Image (cartoon, rainbow, N blue to C red):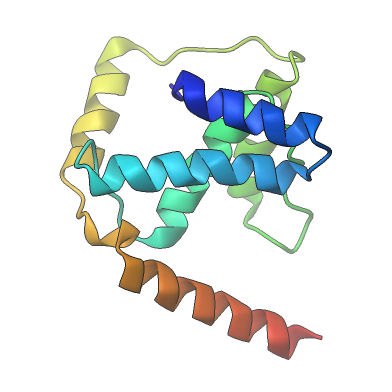
Length: 135
């Protein structure tokens, strides 16, 4: 569940005419803070970013799912589901308390370095390099 301040900031971004990715960035930022403060961990910066984007879509940020060829089929499917929930086209389903607890326990066992400045820097450089060679 995202914090109220995060949702407020994201809505303000959208009202100001900023792109949905900018608004979603607030949720990613919140996720990094959660990991840094020890609420839970993540295996990689990519996983932390994915969790943040998922939260953004579910909170109503009009962030479209990735196109075919940009992500795995399962990722696209999950993103589409999250997007529909956020846009009110699908009922928000809550996992069973057992499953929710298991997922939280699983994330708590993950490391905290995924949100470190060096990890995020390494990730950003790697992604930028990939982007450069594509075009």
